[in-house]
Amino acid sequence: MQNISRRQFIERAAATAGFAALASMGMGWGTNKPSVQSKEMQQQKMKTDVLVIGGGMAGLFAAVKAHDSGAKVMLVSKGRLGSSGSTPFAKGLFEFDPATSKYSLDEFVEAVGRSALGTNNPVYTRQMAEHSKDRIDELREWGFFDSAIYHKSFSKPINDRKISVYSNSFN
Ligand SMILES: Cc1cc2nc3c(=O)[nH]c(=O)nc-3n(C[C@H](O)[C@H](O)[C@H](O)COP(=O)(O)OP(=O)(O)OC[C@H]3O[C@@H](n4cnc5c(N)ncnc54)[C@H](O)[C@@H]3O)c2cc1C
Image (cartoon, rainbow, N blue to C red; front, side, top):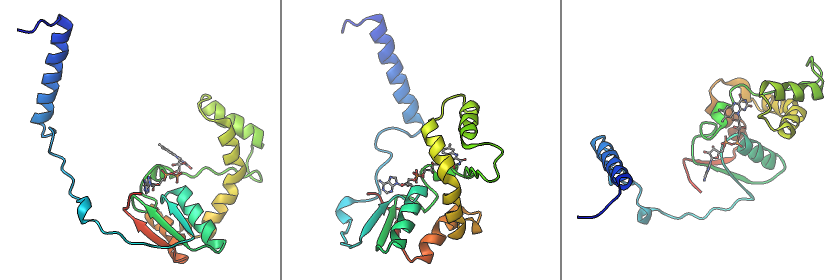
């Protein structure tokens, strides 16, 4: 018989009960077998000037800007364009237009900080305020807002430029 303290007994009993509960829900070891066999994967060599990894907002801008500067671009993403990562949350794009806003730039940065109870990064907030209008004007030009469906919004500027896309791929 092993000599264990009361605390050790309680910890071990709790762990055993937890494992039993997981197993009863079908969440034990060995239930989540991978369906992809790495040995069956094939290699393919491809050439490009610019490889963009990620099909969110940053990836969209990187790919379009590189293409429009004359580069051959390839975009790979682990999900569908515009449908994975943080990007699906960005439904209401922030835009600060100094021509129409009732706030000056400084007042706007201060107001955002107040409403976020100081949890925002004021440097990023200022950058967003300084650049958002130009970026959103570009998205308008690219036909980003022609569809309410995120995947279509992101695909339009990419497809219009015939940029190669490999989605559902990890890198
Ligand atoms: C809850 C929440 C609410 C928000 N609300 C707003 C809002 O109202 N307005 C606003 O403007 N912004 C909002 N944002 C911020 C906005 O969503 C982000 O700033 C923006 O989406 C970031 O874009 P990104 O391209 O940098 O990253 P992501 O959108 O995360 O894109 C990264 C991409 O890379 C892919 N990827 C990751 N790893 C790999 C890999 N190994 N191989 C291949 N691909 C990979 C992902 O699948 C994804 O497509 C919000 C964010 C959150 C989390």
